[in-house]
Every structure is written in structure tokens, then in C-alpha cells.
Image: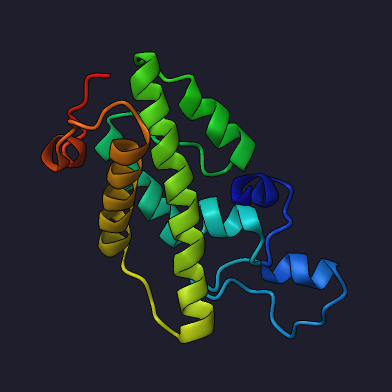
Length: 154
């Protein structure tokens, strides 16, 4: 549901709030300060998001995602990687988890003043996606080390 809302620019970014008539004094990204804070910026184009995507794609052993595209492009691009169906599903789970954790990290900055660290975000993505795949799929025997190395054979 969250990803669908993000694709539609319906999450509560500064730009979306302004477009809904909520007068916000500042629509600049609270994380990087380099552009207006839209859903696509927060989740793809912000330098924090770009660094995160670079590390995630390196970990998954897939080509770097096009952060200049849209969230829809990102989902299509990653669903078309040349891997087995099971590995593509795992990659998709990681992509969804990455989008969610980038949003949570942005909210920590906006509402609590906590600046996220890319390495901490990567560890959170790996752990949350590992637990999700292990507990919600038929791959219950997957080890944490296999997942963290992304040495999976589904």
C-alpha cells in the first residue's frame, strides 16, 4: 500500500502537503537540502537514497537502479533482472523494504532530528528483508549469513 501511495505521490512529502493546500514554509528536502521533497526525491534521487541504492544493488549483485527514473521504473527494472523467479521475488522484497526504510529514515530526521547513516540503513534493510523472506516464504532454512552475503539459490 505504501509503495502504491508513493508511486502516486500521495505520501506526506513536503511537496504533496503543499499540493494538498497545507502551507508549509519549506519544501526543500530535510535530508539533503538539494531539491524539493517529493516522494520520488526522498526515495530515489536524494543523495542519501542514491548512496543507499548503490549499496543495495551491490549487495544484490544487480545493476545500479536508475535513480533518475520513477518508482514504477525501479520496480519494473528490478523485476526484469536475469535471475531465477525465486531470486527475483527476493530482490523485489528487498526493493520494497528499501523504499519503506528510506521513508522511515526520512521521518526520523524530520520528526526527531536524527540523521540516518547509510550503513545503518543497509543493515536494517538486510535484517528486515531477511526476516520477511525467512518467515513469509518457503525458505525457512535460509541462514542469516547466506542472506547477508546474498548467496541465495531459490
